[in-house]
Amino acid sequence: MQRSDRSIQEIARLAGTTSRTLRHYDDIGLLKPSRIAHNGYRHYDERALVRLQRILLLRELGLGLPQIAEVLAASTGAAEEASALAAHLAYLREEQTRLMRQIVSVESTITALKDGEDLMAENMFDGFDHTQYKDEVEQRWGKKAYASGDAWWRGMTDAERTAWKQRVSGLGRDWVTAAESGIDPASEAAQDVARRYVEWLTSVPGTPASRGGDVKSYVLGLGEMYVADPRFGANYATADGGTRGPEFVRDALRVYAEANL
Image 1: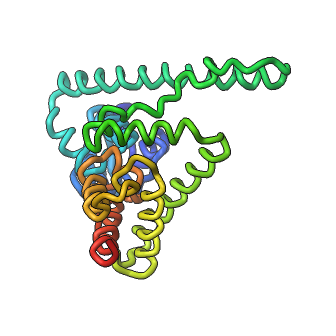
Image 2: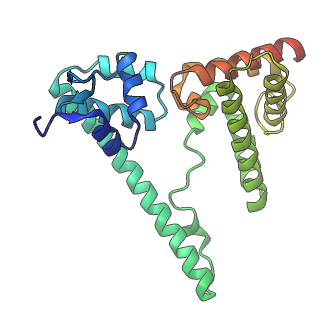
């Protein structure tokens, strides 16, 4: 066996994934092994490793497996793959810079707290950007929506922000748990999550749900967006990937909206 031809177990270990996941990628045509040995074991050459690297990078961006397949289908040659990886590398370097700014910011805060020094507010939030979706929010729901939400966020205490994030995280976990359990989106358990989700939406200033507008259309639109936009759908992705999680959220919200809004 050549050095570039590695077993499925070795690739799974090196990539931090599982043989089961790699077999699933094979089953859906996303990552075919370079060869299958007489004992049935899958083996992967260097070209397959490059493809797996791109799959894992795209997964970290929040894309579902169908979307990843479309991206990979658009670049089949080595030159195209290199170009795509170069673009991804540029993004990773931007993220690296942002994370390093966050690290320095937090380290400075820790040092100041330990030494009893004054905190420099202008340095404490370097690298943290809750305005990254400003343009998109304004385009979708208007400048007033963004301004109201931004003022609400800035007016929170640290404890209130922490509590809000925990609530959002809890809702996300509940959605994924419900989707992975295989229950019907119309079931009582799924509809309880949908109810709590809509209650959370109406508590966020600036959104159509909080302004007494067409809440039903807003909720239905968000559900569709989770399926159509992998950036947002990634919050509800199940362990097997794909769009099953976002589709479950969309369907449960549709049932709730039709019955209650």
